[in-house]
View 1: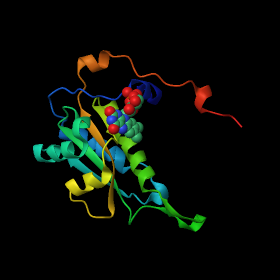
View 2 (view 1 turned 90 degrees about the vertical axis):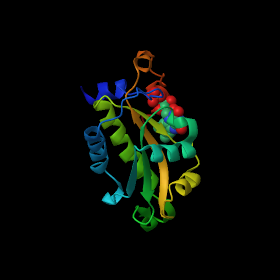
View 3 (view 1 turned 135 degrees about the horizontal axis):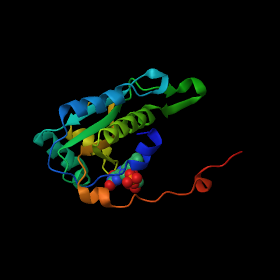
View 4 (view 1 turned 180 degrees about the vertical axis):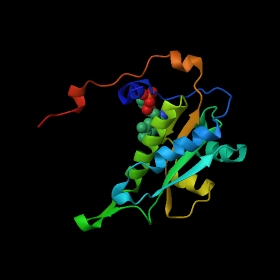
Length: 173
Ligand SMILES: Cc1cc2nc3c(=O)[nH]c(=O)nc-3n(C[C@H](O)[C@H](O)[C@H](O)COP(=O)(O)O)c2cc1C
């Protein structure tokens, strides 16, 4: 499938089949994140694979109902010691870590889609609280959960959520 068709096919999945995502597919999803570009190639992403009951219970403590009935999720974080900063450009407060983590998450989300694995990107949680629940070191910052699982037929039958026209979001100068 072409990338544009894959992009059209992708959708957020909030109801999953019971069967777990196979380890070889998780490995490919992680590989897509590994080779994703990051600012100055710092690779500050730190990804926690949650696929045990214990880990998913913690994910539910952190993000509640956003985990839906999934049995697998990735907690995508960045390491603020390693992430690229814009200090040399006069922006001492800019930390590229969150953007890098988002790029990595996007790559993993699209790889999952290509493998027929449904995803839900979740930012609806309190990140400092999640860091506490997962006992992360202070330099590791949660950015999102990427919830993974096989979509039910009913999810696939639903229409895609609408998008704005290009004219509303793109300006040619
Ligand atoms: C940065 C980001 C954060 C999101 N956080 C949540 C979330 O916390 N809960 C949720 O149900 N969906 C979340 N979503 C999914 C969006 O609501 C969804 O992508 C959007 O409505 C478009 O629908 P689609 O993914 O089916 O095309 C998030 C998506 C992104 C990119």
